[in-house]
Length: 493
Image (cartoon, rainbow, N blue to C red; front, side):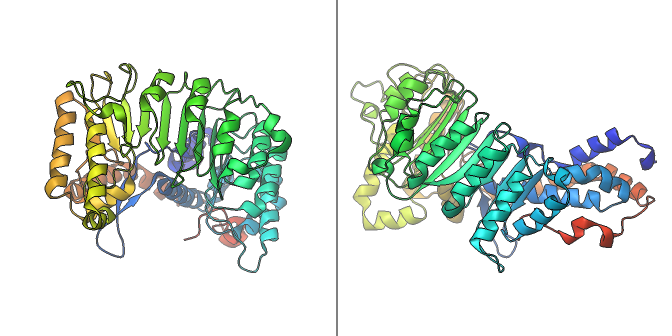
């Protein structure tokens, strides 16, 4: 009978049922992390979910399972409570107050928290921004063992208070940090990193105007030593931050992602940064509009296994004047197995690019010629271990799905790229990890049938366990404090 099982076994069962283990991975999603197609519920067609969307969905599903576990019976409530408080996802900031009340009542619950994810942050439902901020700071105070703090919403007015709370209450345990940083707050961000020595993964999205003229004061003389930092992701106008980081000591850095969004001016000296920190990198992702010296970058990063760049760049070395083909390298790169391609919006004449083609065909043609030359340089002659080339632009894939694939000259380009990869034994993929050109409708029926069979095989033993659990004493939900905080740590739909 279930009540005869030892608590250790029940805890292991709950651990598997919660399916939240990926949420505690210190690594942050990258542009190479696979997206996923999902059928629209209210209309025909498909939507493409980004990795961050999939993480939020995983949060919700896991929370629903945990809530079902602790609501089943008193025995399961006593054992399963720790799982309910391991990670929080907030889509409605008004629920900060509800969780704050719970943690104030039982301080031990917060010590179980490992991950805090804030998808939205604003004042609402009768609360001021200051009250919302105070509630969040109180939650952080109750969670000294927090390992991941993720914010995917701008909250510049509350940044200082939240940063101070993180540095005060969980400086030795925090491993993963994702924040929006105003360019005026770069000095604060640098001092924060100095106070959080255990950080393994950091993602900063900078907001505001170019950071070139930001005054850092005495912070500009600070040389950080971040011995644990393995992954650094920067987005937006981060010029000044990267210039400062060039002189830091980053012995564990292996993954670097730089996304300049639409910023074209005042780019930092990426070559100088890689001169200091490129030797041990295994992952490098650069997404910007101005062209960079790819060959020199690859020389500075000899241990890369994954490299992502923008094939819209005009790279002089890809113009074949020797008769042996253009190149992206000075010498063959021996370790790269995966190359990611950003942009390429004009390559297949779909979506807004099709409209632009009609307005300015010459500009489109020039970009497409650069695309062809750069793609032609992705060969095993220059990358002997190359196994896959992945097209990373989700907008492009959505447009291809909406147009039912490329047509005319664009289709010929797709065939040419496909044949080039096939001849060399290289897999050409889209951002979902599927072969480029595999649209979701083609395999839906087979996948649905397979998934149904897998789900049935998985759920059968669980149904048996739940049937036996009905024999256990039930929980009176009116006495159960989780009922009063229903969804307090869950994303609000």
